[in-house]
Length: 186
Image 1 (cartoon, rainbow, N blue to C red):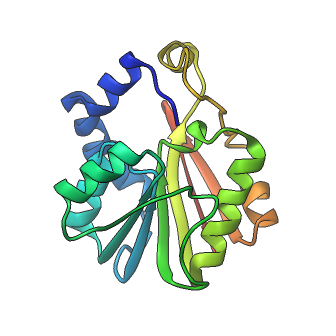
Image 2: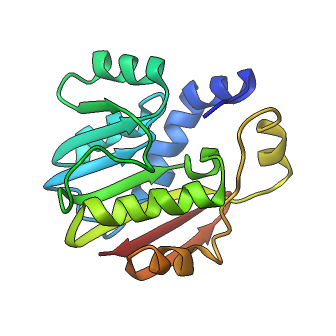
């Protein structure tokens, strides 16, 4: 979804990559099995994709932005990159062992669209599979970075109920600093 120039620069920066690789990704995927078939939703510029290729099994990614999807295909030839909307996934039911997404839910254009994304994640997960990831906690800095962006913050307090409503169980969130992580099973 649309991002302003400052936001695009941040998401491609070495500082962001370092923070994601050293802090957010290990924290968000704690106790999440990343072996087997893993689906990443909304990889954007691929910082999270690179980390997943080093820590997981067979990786598939779905990216809504055509230019970013093309770039991901070039940079990650061993990843099955699809252009598409994570709220309408082009996969059979019960295809993946894990579905993950990192710092992208707030770019989904409405709470209803986010809920369709959650339902699709549940649909494509095998029984016992895990849906996990992270997103940002709203603060002044977050709001300033997102001026002119699509920005629909997710309330970590309501996330477990939303996940349960969309087909998950054992849903939980944990807040830490500028981020929150979530996990749920199908």
